[in-house]
Amino acid sequence: MSRSFAARPDLPEYMTWEELERLPAETAGQIELWEGRVVWVRRGPAEHQAFTFSLTAALKRCAREAMAGDPERCLRVDLETNVFFGAHGKSDFVTPDFLAYRCLEAPYQDIRAADVLLVGEVLSPSNTQADMDEKKSRYAEAGIPWYWEVTLAREESAIAVVRAFGLESTHGRLPDGVHPLYPANYLLAGKWTPQDSERISLGFPFSIDIPWRELAF
Image (cartoon, rainbow, N blue to C red; front, top):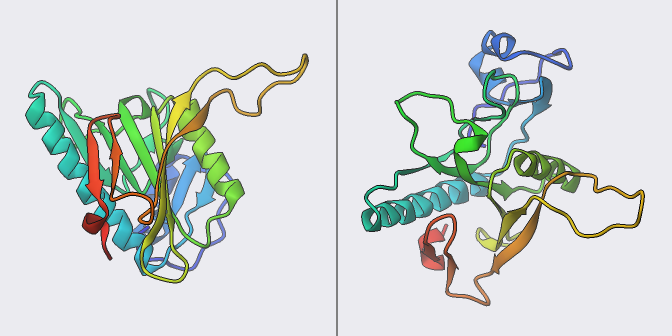
């Protein structure tokens, strides 16, 4: 995420939001709280910031067009904004790279997972599969309908693939006595690469149509 990164101080394993707020801004900006557990956010390359910004701008355009066609619908799209889990409290949150959510009743309110329609992560080489699986499971358990995962090309400044996952809250049949690791999960609903498509196109959670040229570095 696009932040100033400082050396990591020695912190307790668990903190509250109130304790996090007392840290210097450059330190607090590197931390998510997962049910109070301190999780350090990894730094991405310049391409990570560039494509996070371009995807956010493209989704914002699509949201505006969706609202123009349905004046009673109100949507917002932002980048690197905290999403808080549960109806109350702030010591359990993550910070997706980009997100779309329903308009809130008043300015400067906290964004709760119940209001979020789509979250997305731009993967960097420093992201481990275990980290992303755990974060994806948190989004799914919170009931966020759509999760996007963006993989960057390794040899050039470009997006290699965009995957869209839809939430499945039930699971298939398993052998007796076997239970899924996560109570909710995402199923792959769309996959796009610059080589096999001219654009990213999906009808949910609002009409999304993004030509690849709009995402050029």
